[in-house]
Image 1 (cartoon, rainbow, N blue to C red):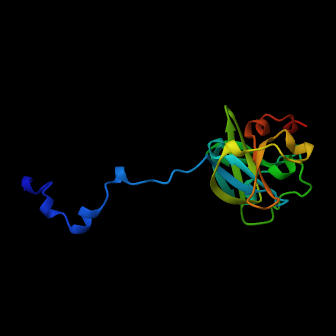
Image 2: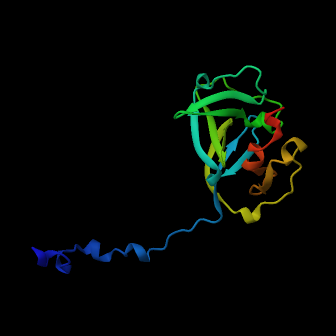
Image 3: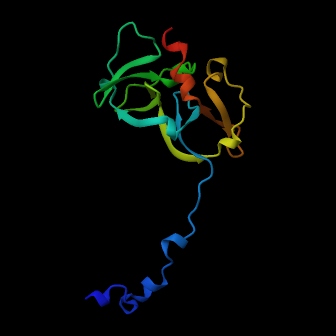
Length: 179
């Protein structure tokens, strides 16, 4: 039985023709992994994947409204025993239209920096994409209400649209939450 292990006569022809895994050419993504999403005005934004603790889709009734809280905050959400504040990201960035909460589920991006965690409610998640941060530019004609929360933007292929890169630390530490 021991003589059968490693016996080349026992390999099928297709197994002999396979290239060992360590020699296969793997496609290497360019840049860093980001999550792309829309806010209520259909503006597209991105956050570095490393900045996002988790993505949660929650029914609106799981978000508990808090009286006398900032109008930017939708309420609180219990995530595995941890209570986090959930904000309307579009409203926070100065969007005139509030997030549509009259639907089955709301996508919430839980971002964290040190001991601070905040849920950012968005309109729609586009997906994950590798983006080259070296190509981020500050070309924006972004409104002043948004500019201090941007790290820059990418111009999308041959369109006049841009994908704006948010700075989650600036959002978490903003004085707007106490106003």
